Length: 395
Image 1 (cartoon, rainbow, N blue to C red):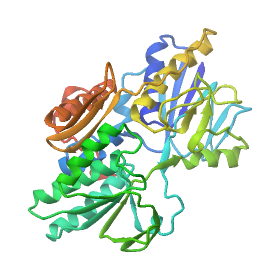
Image 2: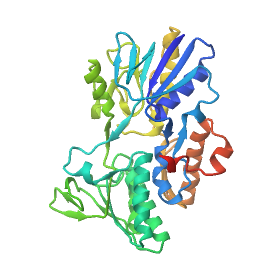
Image 3: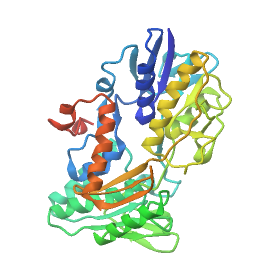
Image 4: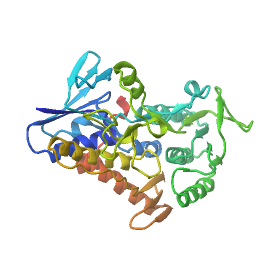
């Protein structure tokens, strides 16, 4: 049996596994997904959970792959890879492969700034979310409005600041929320028309934004910037950017592999998503840097999904000695939700449309979220009935 091993779930890994299993109808191919968790975190929903508390933030792999033949899941930490022997090592366990797909993504980047690790709360996964809402709820129970400082005015930062503001207002308190951004506008990696619309909404809701503010040091209650300004805080949230998963360096150190790197230290792949210079090895999602792409180099779920889908087709084509398809990433747009009734969107095709914060944006956001959840195999009752904060309290 031909074994395809996928290291890491997420949008890219899950999409790849489901796609290749749907495309290959025979029993000669087996897909093995390896992850440290037994669920996928739906990261775009994390900020909305702060207010809603009913968003689906994780989905069990058991649910996602329950109807998939020739699939197995292995929970574990990757300790090494031998590309010569085609083996993956997981704390003593050995998994042999014919094709290996890397999709273990990225992690928060503290840019080695003094005090960030010790004092800031990262906001990147379901565990970070639980920490944040626990701390926030404690302030609210004491009827104290905390001074919240968010570093980074990317999509996570602006959504989180807004959702937090609406939660505090819900309890009849006045929010004190500020965002520090190193660039000259919010959402600096997204089209400027969206930035202007979002900035207007944030300022209208008394969320302060300080641009060109590069953090130089963090103490237990103060953030220092390179312009000699300092900002006090009760809660500090770090959403200033990401870097390739430390698993890249770990695999290089333990296995003797040396990946070619592209921008931001991501693994360089060709137009077919094969890792440069290493046979039978593929990289997809946030960890990969496709050398033939001209789109702005940011990590988006839609790009991960596109790469996962194409890689599945190319692996099959490679096995069957058929021509492979070249990657052509397409930015379709993005939706940012700021409250229960307000979301903003930019849609790129067939032509650019900017939707300011409105209920229309919320409908678009829900359509995007539910469409992905249905693609995972969730049923209507899984999404709309019963407790939807799946297992968050157990994490």
